[in-house]
Image (cartoon, rainbow, N blue to C red; front, side):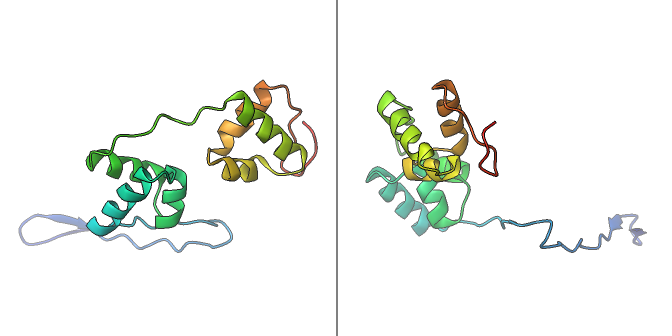
Length: 133
């Protein structure tokens, strides 16, 4: 509903939409990181902690962590490549029944990176319920 005040300004009043927990299973709030947290993130990254792990620890998106590292002048490590050894390790873990998400967590890469690497390596992929595709 639009309301006009005495100076001609129009304001809109919007009712908040209730979030159904059954529909929105994971709602993240934007979280401002303090200067101390950013310094700690930079220090941990320089000690070898990965961006995905830092994002989990600090409850932020990995791109947010990336931007903070960039602003702090931290030189980024080259992206982890799926070397032949890492693909073999991923295949062994996947063959043992781990999901692409679980394998990704162990190798500190994204699940889509694991899925693509396994697919390229000729692995028969399972669907979400564990059946082969």
